[in-house]
Image (cartoon, rainbow, N blue to C red; front, side, top):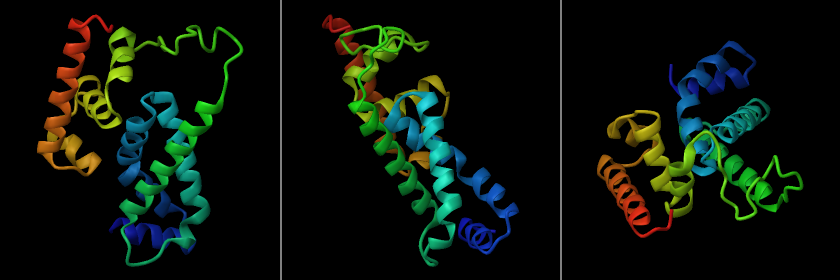
Length: 171
């Protein structure tokens, strides 16, 4: 069964089809969210809100479209909305934001903090999928819906920028 068929059956009331739709799309949604949010916990929040939207609006899906593109747009919009909301928030408690300079120190370590500062969203996403999650470039290309050479370019560019930042003392 295709994603479109799962979604159509779910919209008609077959709740079991949502499970199949979720299993087929969860990696894509997660990686879209992670590429924008750059933090696993926030990416998981985006996943939850994305699937809540799918549950609420499955009946509005237009047949003939691409269900993968539809949920990808929802995930991207949810991530961008969360990113905007978080940008407007101001931490009051130092346990929430221990650095007044905006450098977040988490379990990822200083290299991840540096990567967040110097890399574009695409470069950071590709680097994290390859270096941290261990995906191969062709797998990343399939997840992010981009050509393998583009993924390879982002990966090498990210490494070069990090190397340059470390040698230039920007770390």
